[in-house]
Length: 272
Image 1 (cartoon, rainbow, N blue to C red):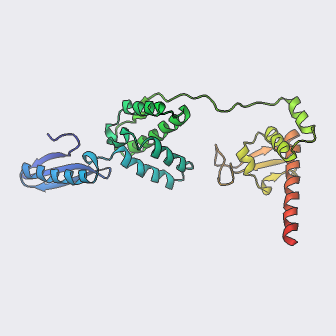
Image 2: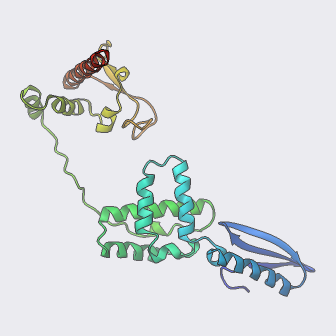
Image 3: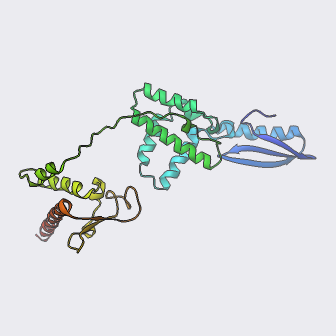
C-alpha cells in the first residue's frame, strides 16, 4: 500500500502491473512488465520528478489549478476578470490554503482563510467575493473530477449591509422635479427618464438613437444591452421592449431633442 498522493499499483496478473498517478490534473496510467519492486521503483521515479516541478503528491495545488481556472473563465468572457485576478493575487495566493492539494481542502481551511482576511481588515463584502471566487474554482474542479465535493458550500459566507440607500421619489416630488427650472437640465431629465421608464442606468447608457421610437403609433424603447461595451442586458440576452407614456415619454423626448441638438453642433464644428 503506497502513501496517499504517491500513486497506486495494481497487479494485472503474471508480470504485468498497472501504475496510476496524477499529472497536470489528470489521472495517468501506464502498464509495466517485471517484478512488483520494479513497478514501485518506476512509480517512485515518476513521483519524484513531478514533485521537483512543484506538483505536490502528483496532484494540483489550489494555486496551480487557480491560474488555469482564471485563464479559462477569461476565455469564456467573464466580465470581471481583472477584479477576480486581483482578489486571487491579494487574498488567496499568499495564504496556506493556496499551497494545499485541491482534494485535501476542507471547509475548515476555507473558514480559516476568511477569518484571516477578516483579521487583516478586509470588509465583509470583499470576503464574500473571495468565497464566491473559490466556490467557482471548486465547481470547475468538481466538473473535471479532480475533487469529490465543493468545500466552500459548507462554509457560511460573511454577511454585509448594503453600501447605498435607495430613495424612492413620490409622484408629487417627481412633478416638482419636472417643473422646477434652474437645475442642471441634462441631469434632471436623465433622472426623470429613469423614473418614468424603469430603465437601469446602464441600459439608458446603452441606448442608441435607433432604439428610441417616440414617433411610432405606440412609442417605445428597444433595450438591447446594459452599458456601452455589453451586447446583452443584465438579466436576459433578448431585446426588451419598454413602452413609453406619461412622464417617461416626455422625459425621453427631451433627452432625444438634446441628443439631436448635440449631434447637430458637432457636425457644424466639423464643417467649420
